[in-house]
Image (cartoon, rainbow, N blue to C red; front, top):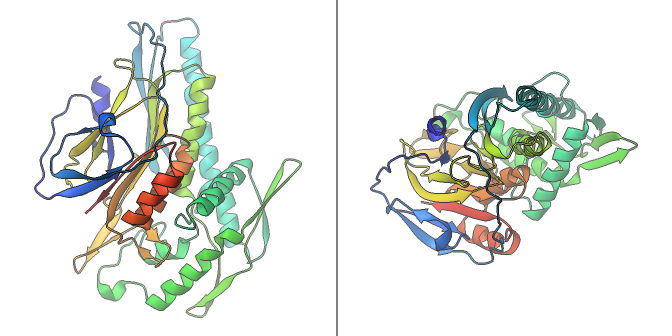
Length: 388
């Protein structure tokens, strides 16, 4: 399927058509709860650090259909400032197929637009912008979309004991990521430690957010916590962009089922993905690529079918100052870009919104804590993370 080659530029995950494998000289390690029979290691410069115990994912049986009359269609979307790609395989010669496809693709467009209008920190009138501009302790009316996403975010915040925290807004901004869009150029441009400490202290109040629902009306109450930085009083702010993309993928999975599509996939910003069935082979073969490869060479292949996944890494949004890597993923214990040794994390299975948050948390946990967390809390999902 030639169209699959379009995804070979993904930062951490690619779908494998029939590509060759590159080679690396540096040795890295990866840790996974996937048994060795469940993946193929194709780059010997990566070594298994540990096969984590506890995975409990039952084998699934799929009914194979005659897809000889199927063709594939590709559609691109842009939402929340990034691109998304839809591939659908179906028999488009059947009566009503064209109208069904048109309605399906329009529904995806409307969904992405609604999620952006709810969660964007920059779109005028969005729930998150309204929340961010609200005073400490103020109650803000929100949409059902924002209510659901904040509920998921709060649940994963609790599950990870704060290692996922979407309230590190000021920290992200201070290091030149998010809406800052300008990286520091030298050590003198880096934020002051005292400011980072206050931003981090403020972010810890995320657990005090209160969500309410009454007769179809949804509200969120902002924590009363404030901090003073450079003479300015700051209240809690949020950035739900990452988990919002995963949420959209979860809803698009529902649209696949609603419109009767069983074959294809949806990739949002190359980090949150949905895989239905592959029209040619049943399973998709995912290339998990090295976060230290400039040419995005794969090191592992993993099959996926009727699953969602998310991936995070320190290799895309990053810069170097005096030889030190600074990336957009913030360690909530330090308030600074992660330096845990974990380069990338991928979670396969369950909700894409949850997976988005979980990969971020794993990046911040560090190897030993991540292994324990995966072993105890993620027994229903396949996980792999790399360490330098």
